[in-house]
Image 1 (cartoon, rainbow, N blue to C red):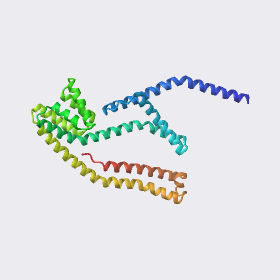
Image 2: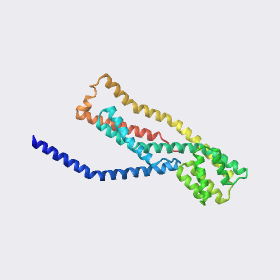
Image 3: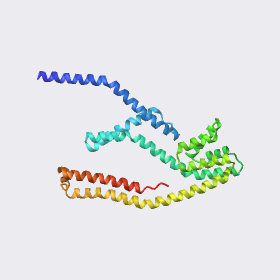
Image 4: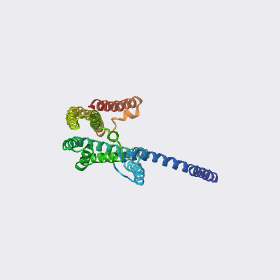
Amino acid sequence: MLIKILIFLAVFGASFFLVRMLYPFLEEGLNRWQKKRIANITPKLNRMFMDVPLAKLILLDTLAPVVCAVAGYLLTKNIWAAVGCAAAGLSIPVIVVKRMEAIRRQKFASQLVDSLLILSSSLKAGLSLLQAFEEIVNEMPAPISQEFALAIRQMQMGVALDEAMTQMKKRMRLDELDLVVTAMLVARETGGDLTITFSRVISTIQERNKLIGKVRALCIQGKLQGAIMSLLPIAFAIFVYQSNPHFFDIFFNDNTGRMLFIYAIISEVLGIFFIRKLSKVDV
């Protein structure tokens, strides 16, 4: 008995000493990894004109996996499920920021035609291009007013119009804005009439949006069929399991059944992937 106690104390002491020795390195590595994650998120928030304190970002990035792990364990009572939920929670801040970027970009695209109309009307009234930009800032809501306000500040600080518009194009990454900036810069270099250029760009964007709407309407049927075909096997398996819980025992107790079960899952995943891929048309 004494020998067992001594062995236990020796193992416990060695483990404690090892953890204490490695803790500073683990803490430093975790801090470095978290700072790298925050450094990837911060520029995206800055591009969206969102000033979030660093301490708040670190707190949210830390709480996301912890909350997911606790929720996973409370729902499943399984430690491995909690670990999986914690790993999934690490991606929540990145997913949220990407979603916010996509919503902001979509809102910017919906405001672009109205802004071009304001630009064209302002230029016809005799205003300069910079004054026309100021009209957009005064008349339009965010996010397009924020982007043009930033472009105005850059030009007032000495940045050329070409560079300011190119930076806006890089921040938003929109095909419509790319078309507008390219047409604007080409018209300025060749001495073309900007009002006529904007009118043609507006017509092009409107026709493109109509085409995109038609394509999306035609793709809805394929997406709906894909969703039904994806959910049908799962719903059928749930119905059969509720009717006869032992019906699927062969898939877990027999080698051939396990192979067929794995093949069914792989086929289901591949089917969902290809249906989504074929139902997506880029215009």
